[in-house]
Length: 89
Image 1 (cartoon, rainbow, N blue to C red):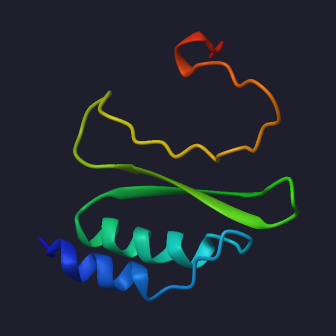
Image 2: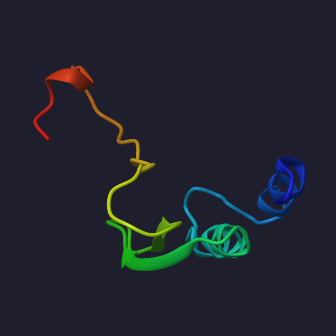
């Protein structure tokens, strides 16, 4: 297994300005996950600003179920924002 500093170094070396595509970061992440034995699904889409983006879904091991880690895009709101626990899912 690779150490965290090696992986962090690979990720930090990739340009990741918020207004740019996350494709290069997703590619490095996918390579690290593949080396760790994950099978991957790459989901590509274009965000509301017309920028290509990538989501990765990884699975390690057999069977169903497991844990998920999700990153939600932050949105800028004017006025009151509902607390997370009260939002409809």
